[in-house]
Length: 209
Image (cartoon, rainbow, N blue to C red; front, side, top):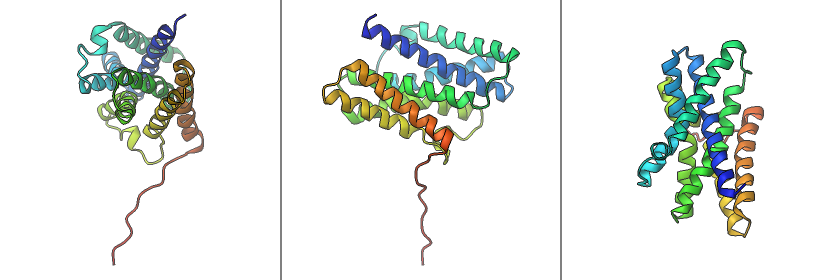
């Protein structure tokens, strides 16, 4: 199995995981089946769509490769079917979202990297790919976007994981292990934030005299 195929499968898996998180969030809001599928699609594909628009990549990835659409729809439908018979674990949405964040952020960064963009732009595009779908999901469901919630390390995890991935490649590590380390870092930080409540310091203005 080639490295390109492995990365493609990981990317597909990331889309599926994000679609699961979107479907679970929609289910908690008691949307109908069409609503669930819409939320699953925007969660899975929203970040990559904005990335492609910003990078002027045409056509957008899911138009060029409809497999992404099919995978997201299938994941959403299977989530509905599964939760009809079994109750998902309490933190299933957060864990699914953490997995999607890790997989999709690195794959988005690799797309920007392939365009030979500056490292800061690569980090920004990867983070955008990972977090924007969840932001759209939360806005549509009338929730405070997860990246803005004070108690969550979210986008920070993506930024650090992508930066580590790029740093490891700079010092000579091959793409495949650097990818796995980057993904592992993102998911590890996000899960640690969920389990132990890790958060960035809060900025507070002191009272003026």
